[in-house]
Amino acid sequence: MATERPNILWLMTDEQRCDSLGCYGAEWAHTPNIDALAREGAVFGAAVTPAPVCVPARTSILAGKYPCRTGVWHNSIDLKAPVPNLMGRFRDAGYLTASFGKQHYGGRGSAFDTESGPCLSEHVHYFRYPEQYDESRHDVVKYPGDIYNWIFGGRFPAPAEETAEAQVVGKATEWLDAEGRSCPLFLRVSFNGPHTPVVPPEPFDRIVDADAVKLPAEAEEMPEGSPRWLDEELSKCASAAPLSGEQIRKMRGYYYGEVAFLDSLFGRLLDGMRERGLLDNTIVVYCSDHGTHLGDFGLVQKQTFFEPVVNVPFIWWYPSGIAGGARFRTPVETQSMLPTLLELAGLEAPGAGYSPSLASCLSNGREPEQRPVFSEFTLASFAPHTKHDRPLVMVRDGEWKLSGCFDSDVSDLVLYDLERDPHERRNLAEDPASRQQRDRLLALVSAHLQGESTNVGVT
Image (cartoon, rainbow, N blue to C red; front, top):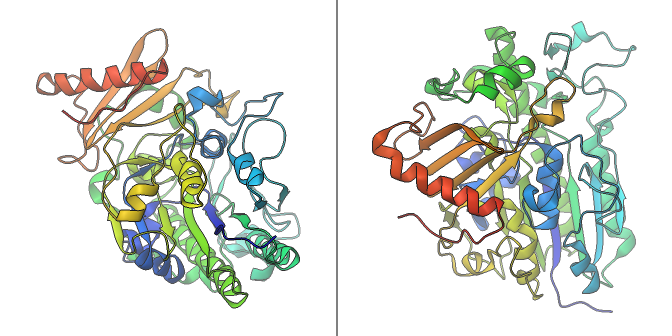
């Protein structure tokens, strides 16, 4: 059947920081393709991941619900049944759906009609190069120790076309050619990068001068007043202390170089769709599941509530349906993506119990209604190396952000005023002058975990 509904292209990355994109103000970024989408489209500057770890975040985005509703709190969960998601609503409306690359969401079954890898190439694994490669010849930066030897930097040892990401673009293009234009298409292209192993191919391994990367000096060390679970649990696996200053410098250069490579592949895909006439009526949305640390805050990897991890890229492009050039500052939640896509596609957005659609603000270019947004997980992804499986929850409402451990007791409270303290150096949880804000945000978390409405703004 001929379609009047728009095609949908969902571009997804893993562990991508906002400061890896020029459109978010990074002077060292080499991302012309995504920056071009951003110039013509809409950018959310304060988009919050539902979880600072892969599987819970990806599951929540597909479901349109938080981990406390899906039951997926960490990567190691093994659910015997599917987690309900919103992709079926697109299929019911006649969409052909496919996802190529990294899937990594919770529950049994498939969210898309077609799901295919690869996630990683055969040339580099998360923790090592295969035996045929001498790591010393590829400038490898590897996390030391006997737990997780992540590859934080290095050179891809084969041609760029043999990376998993290039193969994913190839599979997606083949699918587009095979399906033609008889039905509206919903395509997700999901890269593992810039998640470890961070090994960009030539020439992207040296496209970013590591000395040009200037992360905020104020945020190089873990702040005083940080929660105990950071020091007692996460730092055992994710402290930046075992890495030298030179290793951290190289790690940053390779990370931003990897993003530049991914941008080139997204550009190739977009050009291919444009040549095929498939972008004429297509919504493009770009996001990452969460961010990461690059030695900042004294940490590597994710699983914190600091801004480089919870604040993620969230970019929309649809010239005929959204306000071009819009820049939104109000915090939003990325699991609003599918409800928003449903409404933009002329379908009914889900109601109560789901994250709200952002279609109205995208269409009119005005800031969305301010409401609290949350992020939540447990540290059980690192099992058996941690015993901490208690719920860790963050709420952001306007420029105030509170996090803590919300088990039978509430503990490890951290409160930041991001307007006055953007680098999160001063924990105000015990500050008498901030007591009213702390209590208000605590009440929001309590209502959120109990399934009550938290649609209230800053007072």
